[in-house]
Amino acid sequence: MIIRDITPQDTAAIYETEKCSFPDPWSESGIAAECDNSLGIALAAEDEGIIAGYIYGEYDGERGYISHIAVAPQYRRQGMARALIAAFESRAEGDITLEVRRSNLAAVSLYKSAGFSEAGIRKNFYSVPEKEDAVVMIKTLSR
Image 1 (cartoon, rainbow, N blue to C red):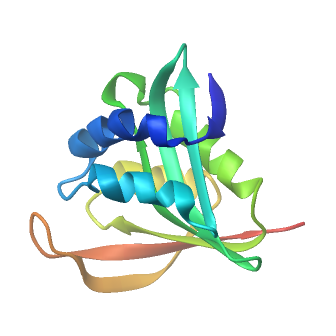
Image 2: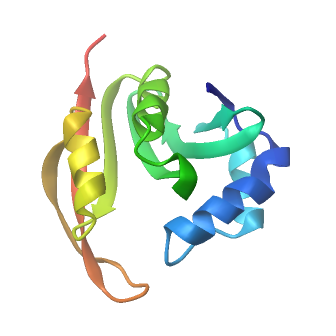
């Protein structure tokens, strides 16, 4: 497995993982647009030419924000998400934040094991498929 920058050619594969990972997936055009985000960090985990997972976020020079992370079903529970988080962290410093569905206990556990802690709740942050609170998580990187 290698972790590399996402390119526009990765859009279709990322969209397929989006559809099976989130009830309200990004559109293909939204995914492609992230490649042009000047503050963006967009990384793919590639396994023998297949996009196995990805992470999107931003870093503004002081703090980072992870907006999306997903791993294709056949690659889950193999350390890909943890590797993507570590690669994101290598390009940032300061605080990194993210939101996660309160009911997504596997993701909350992953983030806690990666050093994130719960910082608060965003009421009704998610609306699809139904309203649900988000747990705000934060990690402070030391450099």
